[in-house]
Length: 77
Image 1 (cartoon, helix red, strand yellow):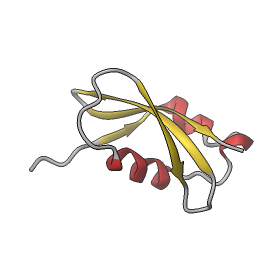
Image 2: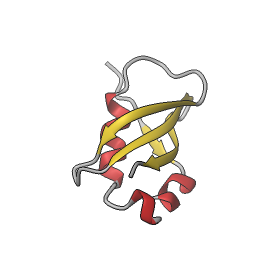
Image 3: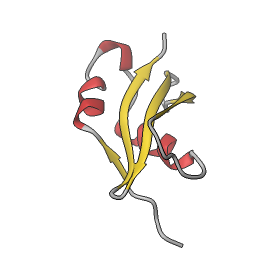
Image 4: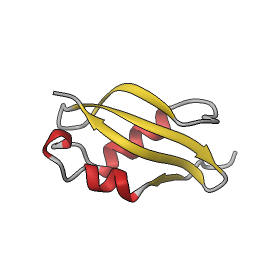
């Protein structure tokens, strides 16, 4: 079985520095992205992930030839 590669965009990494995404780490994003089953042919918002810190977040991802691309992260209040 081929291991899926997850790529976090620079935009998503920058968003992690904003207050709204406080408490969400790259590891949380990787865990969430790996947990999505199947193939994602177009950019899709996935809701209701929870970071290790307890912060809820959504992410937008799409599968490309390079792997699963995490486009952005949206922290919840």
